[in-house]
Amino acid sequence: MKALQFLLFSMMFALILLSCAVQKTEAEIRMEELANNLINSEEPIYLAHNLWQIDDWDIEAMNIKSKELVRGNPVFGNVRPGSEIHMIPAGTAIEYVMFDYRYRGHGVPAPYILFKVREKSKYDFLGMIPKYQKNNQREVSIEELLVRTFTTKTFDELTAGMKPEEIENIRNGTIQKGMSRDAVIVSWGYPPLHANPSLSGRHLYYWKNYWVKELVDFDENDRVLQSTWYGTEGNSVDVIE
Image 1: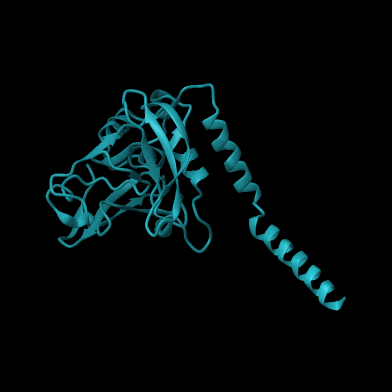
Image 2: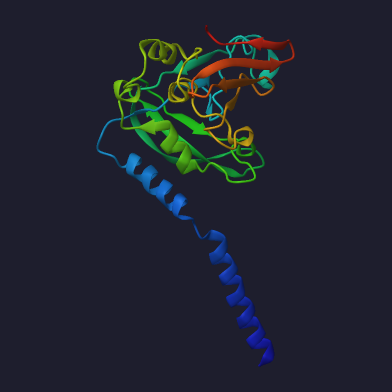
């Protein structure tokens, strides 16, 4: 009898622990709602910021964007010489978006976002390398990635109120001194969370590739002050005056 009681108690305790482990916060629930609203939206969907893609491969949420460091250079590990990075512009019309799972290493399925650009015949996959999208405080969920990347706003609505030179930089995938933080996000996307505990701090760290990082400094008015990248060739300013 005592053995049975102990077994029942153990099972109940395990169920309580399991329920606590999977219990979601209000923020997580809200993010899931926003993501599902986008997926099921009857309104047109667009890219919320520029995305960079190596050839036609899967897209990684770090938005690595340096053509010069990819072409003929093995800094991406298994990227073959001659690979090109091309930009999918903010405001691009999206025909289809949903969650999917693909296998990434050791046969373990990882969450991805499957989407289709209206003008393309093939589907693309957007995913995250988990270690780059979390820190001691929190981690970016696949739902948050979807909400960050897709929107019902057109390009004109995304850039409403921005200066003409900011909009031109967004179209070119560049940043410029004096550019607003919001314009930087639309132009370069969201920086990886592991190096950016806050998106509102005086600095944002981006990556040109997995070995070369770029530090964007903002002034007291939340405008770009300067941008410096740090790599094997030393430090170099990489911002348009």
